[in-house]
Image (cartoon, rainbow, N blue to C red; front, side, top):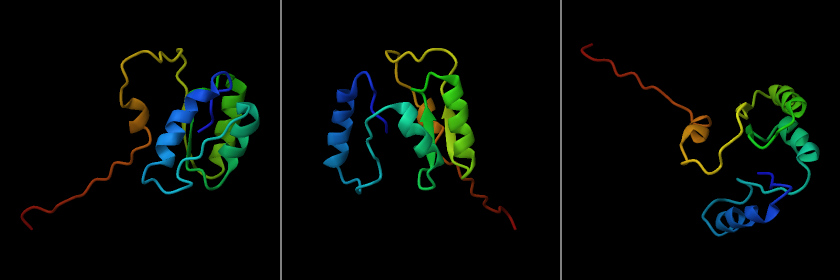
Amino acid sequence: MIASEAHPLTSITPGEVMATSDLPGGVVNMLTGSVAEIAPRLASHMDVNGIDLTGVTDPELATSLEIAAADNLKRVRRAPEAPVDWLATPGIDRLTHWLETKTVWHPIGI
């Protein structure tokens, strides 16, 4: 997770919650700095499994991040074209992008 450049203090609360939870260290990493400097390294890193480009407003940067992420087939969620309404009722659409659905087939009457 890359903290907002304009409001980095809002990342402290989730960081404190994760640090005091049962989550093993290193599962979620909180980074601060410029998105243009940090994001390309995350996109090309082989241990990162997916990136969400919701906060990336520059279309050229988003395209270059998608290309870098394609090298190791990581999942990329591109930010919607419309501005994100952060005050809207939260939904699960951002979470379902990262879920894997597995189907189990059960033979009947064999």
